[in-house]
Image (cartoon, rainbow, N blue to C red):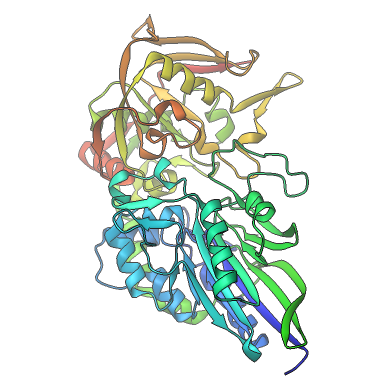
Length: 523
C-alpha cells in the first residue's frame, strides 16, 4: 500500500440550463456553459485517476434551451441529463429550481439519469423516507480509499415553489438532517473522506461569523461547518457566489453560476499504520474563460438548440412607442413602460386591478418595435406562474416598505442597498406596483418611507382587504415578503408568465408603450 493517495472532487452548481457559450438575448458569445466545463472535466479526468464529479443543483431550469425542451413536450431525453450522463457524473443533488416544472418532468429526469440523485432531507410525506432514493452514496477509490457523499437541499423551497409542484413532499431542516446523517455515516460506513453536497449557501461571513442576511434557514452553510463534526468537504451553491476556502477546517467551494466555473477540491491522504489520514486539502475554482467548447457536448444538444433558435425568432407582435431599458437603476426610481406593461398583462389575465412585478436583473433591455419570443424570455427570465392573493392595506404598506429598503442614501446620493447586491444580486426582490398610487421617500428612515399610498385617489384603508396579482415566488413570501405568506389564494394561474405575455401580445397584434406615473421614488 503506497503512502499517499490524491482524491479530486469536482463540483458544478447552478448551471441553470446553460450548455453553449451564448447569450440567448442576442446570440452573442458568452464565457459560460456546460460545454466549456466539459473540456475542464475531461482534462481533470485525464490527470487524476481518482476523481469524483458531482452536480449540486439548479441544473434543469434557466435558459430558453431548457424552457423550450419542457414546453415542446419532447419525447427526447432532457438535454441536461443527456450531458451529465455523457460526462459520467457520479451523483447529483436537487436544487430549488429543479421543482419549477413539476414532479412529472423531475421524476423523468431522475429516471433517465445514469447516476444517483442524493436527497437526504426531501422526504416522501407518506413514508418519511428520502423521496428521490439515496440520502448518500459511497465511492471506493484508488487503494480502497472510501469516500461518502451526502446530498442535502435548502429546506426553504416551500416558501417559493408552487404547491402543486411539490405535492407529497416534505422538506426537513437541512442542518439537522445533515447532523443526523453525518453521525450515521461515520458510525456505519466509517469513510476515509466525508463530503456534504448542499444546495444552499452561507448565511454568515466566513471569517467573522457575522450574519450576512436574515436568518430564515434558507442558507445554513456556516452553521453546518461550525456545528457538525465529521465533515471534510462542503460543496455549496444556490447563492451564485465564487468561493474556494476553508471554514472550521472544512474545505468549501461554490462555483459561481451559469457554468462560469467548476469547483475543485484536492485531498491528499497518507497511510498511517493501516489507516488513511487526510494530510492536506486544497479548494480552488477553475474558470471557463478562454476554454474551448467540447465538440461532443455541442453535438449532443445540436437538434435541441436548432429548435430553440427557431422558436426564439418567432414573431409575436409589434410595439408602438418606447419600451426599452437603457438604465436599470433609473427604471427602478420612476415608473417605466416595460414594468407597467408586465403589470397590465398580469392584471388582464387575473382580472384584478392591482399588480406588482420586478425588473429581475440588470440585463433586461426591454422590447424592440418587432417583438419575438427571444425578447420575451430575455426580459421575463423565470418560469413563474401567477397568483391572486387577498391582502390588507397594512400588508400592502409593509410590502412597499420592504421595496423602499432597496435604496440607500450616501451623502445625498441615492444607491442600491448592499443587502440587495451582496453576497448575491437580488434586484428581483424590489417590486413596482400598478393599480395604486404611491411615493417612497428615501430621506426617511427604513420602515417609514411610504409617504403616499392611495387607491383610486383615496388613501388606502389599512384594515381593508385588496386582491393583488403577483408571481408565485412573491405570493409565497419569497424575498422576505412574509406579509404575503399564507394569505388566501383567490385565483391560481398555472400558465408560465412568458407564455402569458406571448399570448397577450399575439392576441393584441400591436401593443403600446404607456407610462402613467402612478409611483415615484424621492430623495
